[in-house]
Length: 217
Picture 1 (cartoon, rainbow, N blue to C red):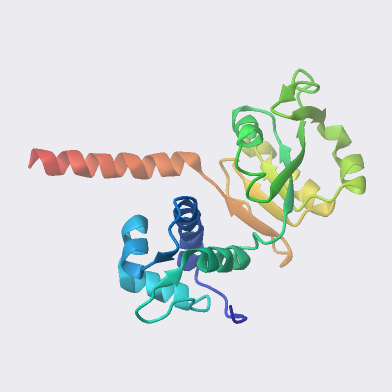
Picture 2: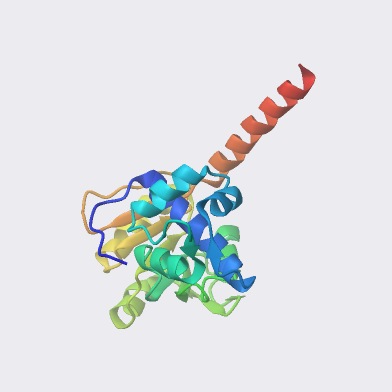
């Protein structure tokens, strides 16, 4: 793959993990080559959009041949930064934080969860998956000896901003925010992804409503 330095559009970036997932599935199925038509069918995208997306990260395809599944998967993985591992800490041992801690695929995808923290004394010391919940009071001490690339924020909305600012001051430069509030940082070296589960459910509700209206017309 040739070095590609242009910043990708948000739309392309959000589609790349889908390509990566489908290519990994095809690799497990023993498929060695794939066309833009077949990849588009799996992705629910047009072949032309698939070609545009893949051209934006360096191509990989050959006329009349299509794409080598493994080469393309590895190339997308490289663009996504999956060619090296990342470490995470989880802040909040409630339902969402616990679900993240128990998710089985993160380690296989290069994301290692180092520790989990909570302010609730009743949760401190409990086991969640392979982790023992630690007190938030121990966060600073922990991060002086262990480097965390990503902080998973699974705290109530009222505590989100303060908690995020705390981990950023302690040297964490990426926040995966599940709190129901949008976070942003003026610092260029801090990256935030806000995840709003209720908004996804609301979109699903809208689509269901439109489908029901169409069926009744």
